[in-house]
Image (cartoon, rainbow, N blue to C red; front, side, top):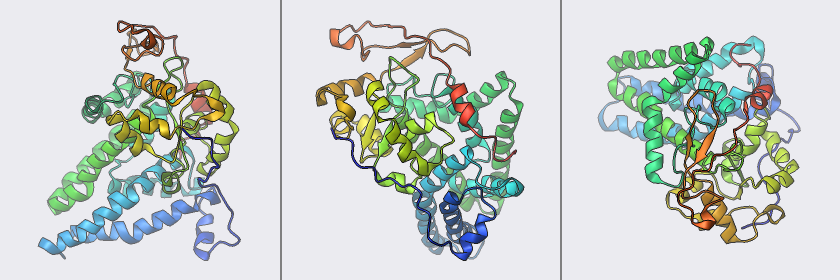
Length: 397
């Protein structure tokens, strides 16, 4: 375990002078702190999109085509994919472009997103309309509660469920609540994407498969790994607290402080450059509520170590704020207790009463009670907290 270190994750430092290119874009964006997004989008338009267009033409064939596609895949799906995906996350919560330039936001969603495996509108609809309202509880289509979260089989079931029924579950969620704007946007975005792919298939089936369809599958698997790791540790005594913070990791420098997931769920509209300072304001609460903070690792480490049940490695990177863990062994037991399966026990959409399934109940495990069916207190809705801090739809205001 580690003591609370000095935070080295990125915060905003106003430059002495902006370049002419930056001054041009400052006329269009709401916040100067978002200029890194503009620089990244510029790189995408200089590298990713032009190469993709070439790959769709008849200029190259055979080995020459693959010689261009391999670096394209690296640039788009390995270098830019995480950066772009987490930028999409940021601009879903905070409007990137000024109101009079909403068309630029729509351009990013409808033209740029598909190159990285994001169907238009789907991310915003699920993330803003469902995930932050339900806070990983059972009605969230991407909820991790029903699965044993240190199990590869549990993860495969989770991915299988989301890949096969995720869209249906998301549509049904909004349809049942008569939230027409959301389910219509979801439907329109998904249908438009697949119709476009059918049309492009007749232009160049190989390019369509490898530039649009493979990244779609890849993106959803990557997002499932991220969400699984972010919501792997659920406090059985307070299931509202079901996520973590990862501090001082290179991932935060490339993906806009996404490691601070617990801070984000409490302050979803907070700008990413403000998150490290917000984290430091609440360290005493983290100690009191035993909110997990990991130092020097990110979600892929957490995922791999959970799959290998390497709780010892996870405990080595835990930050022991105010002596919240009396020993490494106690920390490991706490980590294990938070990966247990939850199941919905009362049968309506509005129910939030959950039951913890043995054998890792935090109450009964020390007493070897393997028949535990402890009923947790009802979970208070997180919707009001999230919605109050969530700005209006960037594309509709």
